[in-house]
Image (cartoon, rainbow, N blue to C red; front, side, top):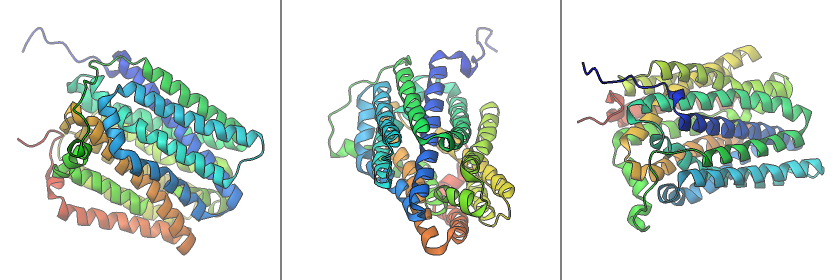
Length: 409
């Protein structure tokens, strides 16, 4: 053994990583509070499941429209600055909602318009904030850093909805104002992060480089399988948009109950992600990922059939735990298998797929609930997730057989 070798320092001994964690936590708390506030206010104003689904649709539009551009921005410019600008845009959007609420002029159309602006900010923020992590920590601890970052983000997803449920019950103006302040602080801290290397100037944009992130994922079957498995499972099975209906109409628990339902998946996710940060999964990754997504589908079915609020919470905790396993594996694979000079473009595609699955999944859930009823729509969604897993094991055998984060040699 080399006597001069030194143990890898703990993640929290990296000042830049600690600041990065604050950015992830603060921005995620603000986002989750905004989701709770906008969703609750929309349903209170309209009583329409379809309108709840529209929130996801309008946030999806800018992501789909700009995802090729946002990846190039992340690769050509300082990722810290891009993240700052995106978070300032989000802060301004909820600031407008705070002013409208204080003036008594909050309306469904304004909620949708500002949701679109938040979606635009996130479209630029996400590729930059997600692709900067390999520039902050050494490569040998990157899997732990991804798991640690994920657990911190999931902790925020626990705190955000619960805090949002309390604040929206007190005052819509208050919650929108707090969201704006938190997003602004996250952007300012992001500017202070020191990175190990600055992004070098890239080649001029042309059709080849414009689609290079998409081409890279399509050309790597393991990454393509991981991304599409997440896309279709969440797109067809996501039940988040209809949780206000569970809280208000099915279990009659009010805004605080809604906050608890929103926080329950993250409670399961944070316990799992913290465990993975300490004991990362390093073998049979493909099989573990498929199993986790199948459990997510089964949890969705249990949610639909829940006889009580407690059972629904337990089902959502299991769903969050299984989703966390899938997310950490997928995110780490993308980080490790992508060259640094392309991470922005690849993560733009990855972010587009993730946001698409969540926000179009919200739209699908709201539309299905308005057509078939809330419980049948969630039950159908859970069945679709299980079916997607079974089909994907046949189509993406490379992912099923993937054993490590590194590509096979």
